Image (tube, rainbow, N blue to C red; front, side, top):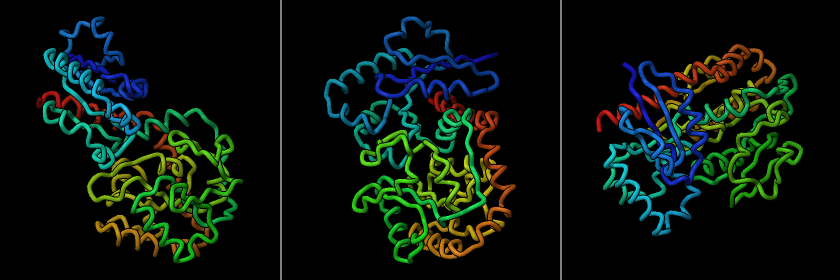
Length: 349
């Protein structure tokens, strides 16, 4: 028997419900059917009694903190919550563009969550995979790894403590003297070399969102190793973003400055890393400071490695990762896991 699930994908119409709906449409769970709307005021068009589960997503994007200071917003939200509770809706606090840690930084919803049980949906491991596959799936790129001019491609935008530690350590050890790097936020205010900046972006007014997902081939063609500066470096919540997916698309060798067990999670998703070619022991270091130091030590080795030999030895790994990234069926399997989490939360509730 098929169970029917209904999603109101943006309770207050403050987010990007279209992207969430396209994400949900890729789920393929046996015995489950999904229908959705992004419009609260269209609920009267649906016979809600026919559904086995009803979900309403509350947008939690950081950009909406301008709304969260408005009492009318909270009054309207609470009114809608009460009406939907009576109809049997289950609620999802939704911000797949961010990690769990970053969602916790915004405490505005705490009083609400005491009154309304919510499932919290952060980006995890598949949201940016979905976004980047959707964005780059039909594009043709020209990647060429035959002539490496620079050692590292190392891009930073927002300043975070773990990023500052690694950046300072790399500079202190003169590891960036032949690299392409940036750190747009203060106190550094370092822009990428103009020759390698996205030609369609105003470097003096870099967009806060969206452009990070763009790909410009010269950045990857001319650099040997992508030093991926991920969002968080905690030891409990691996969050995979466009930062790692760009070198995977470009078939570039990478080292990741991110969460404890980040590479382990990549491998659980089916991707391969470079443990057969160089030491990836940093991934097993739970202490973030020690992990940063191990990455610096590794970069000392990689700076002087034979880059052409490195790319010959890693060809099969890099090809596998690119193929897996563009595999729609594999992505669908992991989206199934997210949607199954929603369904199980509803059943427990």
